[in-house]
Length: 151
Image 1: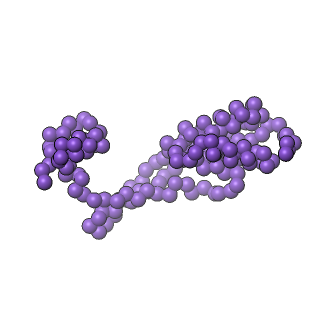
Image 2: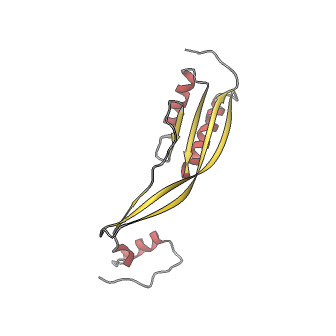
Image 3: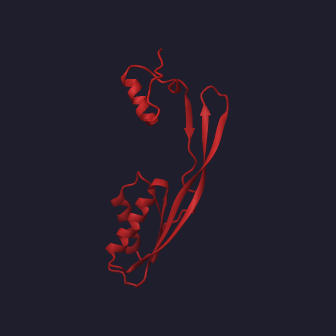
């Protein structure tokens, strides 16, 4: 097996791997087989009024779920987003506020959460644990006007 050492080091690793595979050569880092186990995404309480948003959730489905909670008479709910889903959680809360014509208010809190990643080697040499910081947002969406149930 031939290793290509003439790759441009300024390019990202994923691009280097794709270039080397196109050339029919493999990188030396491809030989190591390691498994990355990520930490648990949320360690918060789970209730009916907590909406956890990630990048895989359907936005319209989450919006419908929030609307359904408000239709049932909920006076507030909390939208949680972590990491790359912070943007999506903020967008969800702002869409709710816009749909209710300003009768909803937002209370936004940010935090930093620590998660541990475990890197297990395939040759059972042990595992390496590394901690990383992830930003999170917790948005409390609550009514400012009490409206009677419409249904």
